Length: 276
Image (cartoon, rainbow, N blue to C red; front, side, top):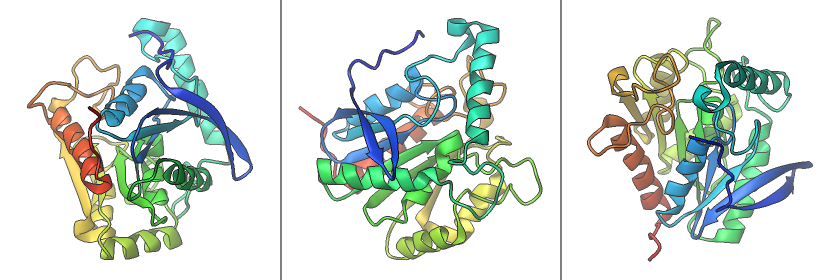
């Protein structure tokens, strides 16, 4: 796979909460915010947005880090350049004040910008509300966005923050106590939250999903996929990225079944109608 020029998306710079970011859009219908995993809007992340748009939504993809459209795989950049690109992007994010990497009980400041984007897109696109899918580094952002009543379909794909490398982080999610309480209250009124992970993924420990089940109850739809169901051609040493790198896009495959459940979740919650 080569770099993706993203030419089928409309792009504009959007200023919210005092920060300006490039935002890509595709499709018509209610908005679904597609929040890229590390190291940014790769061709496979863009394809997630394309498939969501094909269901009758407006896929809205903000650029938070990395080089938009770059394919990070070694067969595109070379092994050294691929590793350098990934490490550089992660390092920049880790030192940024917008992202909470290790702390528990905190919401990353960038979530405020994403909430404002979701509100803006709801005003633009209409419909009953908005959806969001965060992946890896940004997985928990979709949960933080659910403090807003307009967020009707939050999806946490392999939510990896806070990094589970220190005691107490494995059961945590990067959402503050007050924000989580708001989400709990919404879940008590009918909101549902979907989560995806591979069963053996150490970046997203099973205890993190157990914690989400404890605090959100039956409103948390946790989908856990056997490791052996990951893409054998993945560039990752362990299955991790359910919707992108480790997807086996064939009917009957567990990752494809999970993907289809995500698309159906958006369709049901946002009353999507595929375009003719």
